[in-house]
Length: 32
Length: 165
Image (cartoon, rainbow over all chains, first blue to last red):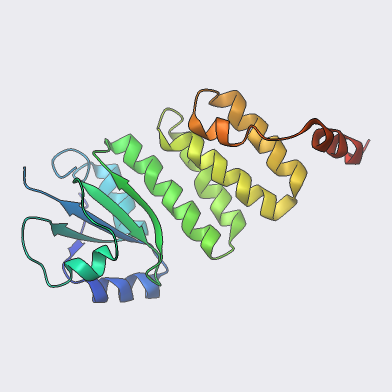
């Protein structure tokens, strides 16, 4: 089963999104 | 989101295929947090922010989304993303897909609103009015129906006069 691969750095993720022509999903969460 | 929506197989496949995803625990310091958040604040979590590849914000959503609602939301974002690139045919496919596949989702009437905007760019005034009428018929109680309840009778008469046959 596929799992979402969460990136951990913003600029590399932006670059990847730009190259792949995909939107970037930023997920801000809390443990509660 | 982390226990229900993201582990959902359809969600995981769709996000993996169409998005680049990054997450931030707002309770823990992260060197990229401020840059990623931009000028906004996290008033409540979960908060989802969608950016295009140039860093322009496409959309933000606060609160939990179950899988079907999230899948509709993701299609809406992809439609908006295509619109920012002036790919209106592709935008229509995503936006209409959101409403067709998930008609009960809260994103569905908004997707039709943006589909009408894309339709306008492709086919002009008669198309946007046709799509607005459809939106109002399908989701009469939605805020999106109220936002398009603006077509004067003289515009309708002009469109009717221009129809072939």
